[in-house]
Structures are given as structure tokens and as C-alpha cells.
Image (cartoon, rainbow, N blue to C red; front, top):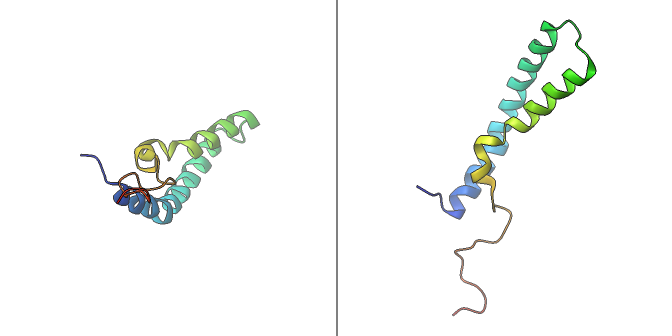
Length: 81
């Protein structure tokens, strides 16, 4: 079932205000643990870990954020009466 434009905007705000800070805390813990396993790994490995965790959060929410910054496609235009 597809979400309406207004529902997607609301969920996008909830994800950004609540979900993203929680994910940042969890990703920091995971990244610190992974980096600690390797006893100060090389810079490129650290970079790969942090970039992967930075991009990974958006994957499940891509459909919610698509088109949210644009005008409501269901709203009547100014020229329509």
C-alpha cells in the first residue's frame, strides 16, 4: 500500500528527528567496536566502515524520502478551478 504525500512527509520528519539520532548512537557504538577489533586499522578501512554506516541508514527509507521536497502532486494547481 502506497503512502500519501502527506504521510510520507510526516514519516520523513519522524525519521529525521527520532530515528536518525538513535541510528547515529548505534552506528557510533558499532563503528567503535569494529575499529577496536583491528587494533587501530589502516585509514582506508576506517573510512570504508564510516562511509558504509553513513550511507546504510537511508537504504530502507528511500521510498519515504523520494519527492518529499517537491510540491504536493495531489494538490490542485492554481490554474485548475
